[in-house]
Image 1 (cartoon, rainbow, N blue to C red):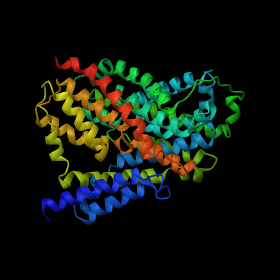
Image 2 (cartoon, helix red, strand yellow; image 1 turned 120 degrees about the vertical axis):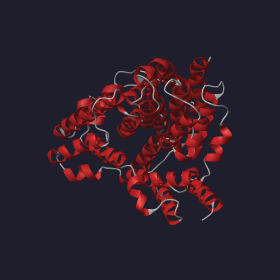
Image 3 (cartoon, rainbow, N blue to C red; image 1 turned 180 degrees about the vertical axis):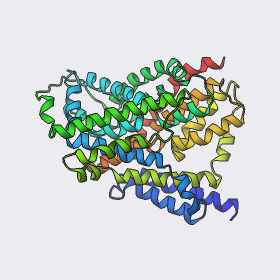
Image 4 (tube, one colour; image 1 turned 135 degrees about the horizontal axis):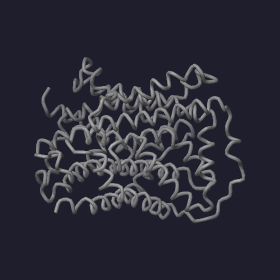
Length: 428
């Protein structure tokens, strides 16, 4: 098959995964993962990806991470632990604006040190409680969750998978202090600015909030709550410690997704209802990730992305326009490939144009801009899909493409400018 045919198939795949997102409110009965699954079927049928390669292309590490974390978070939700945590947090605030700002900072800091997808898994029940107590639209609370955890994850090399890829493969010396030194202040600024922008967009007014309930009243099973708490704390500490070991070249577990999976396997038998714990795994999200790996590989192999990369190349590594080039590429291509697959491919591109471990502006630009790209459109970050799937499966509603983009365009422009202004002096 010729290149023209492959590029046509690549364009078809892009349409298959973007158009349904645009029409989500009318296609709510058809889940997001089913469109991605069909696109992966087309990728295999047209031989962009062969059946024999699927075992390598599908990242079992990510799949087991999701199954493990969904199991533990599901137990935390069914036991009432997440409601307990939610009300314990909310009870510290007396005004709607204070709660909104506090929630943004909470989601962001959690994502920075516990991986954004972890917060995307455990955050929705908290966001739902915040919306109910603050009496704000559910969509506002969930968009705040999506944007805040994306922003917060920029700050550290363990905040999200793409940062981890950069920290390991870029050659940066001591990536953790490098990330924290250059990205902490702009991240905190964005975590404050973003909720203020959303308050303006949604026309939220400040009012006093009152909570008459006692957080402990929401615990439905103390045994399951203790098991979930132990599982969550153990998994988070193990993931963080393991990432630190990896960053500094010490012995570690390379397939870190196995960590929460093994922890979940160890607590199933002690739960009140092990079957319910497994049923709480969001298998639709798991299916989305499995088929996303296949589809994005097919899009890359079709050859439609490479010309865009060349068009957006504004100069070699170390040039005055290099950060602008990385920014544009990240914001645009992440909307098609999602940010993790994009960064995995773009690292090789930066190395080919001469970027080394000393090219701090380019690597930090890639980390921040590819992550912030997740706030522009739903497909820009996998965490958005996790949150949307939760909304659709639990509450039979969703974040429409129009509503997400309406807020996302302004937020992304402001977020990008703030990070850009903080990184620009590094090129001088």
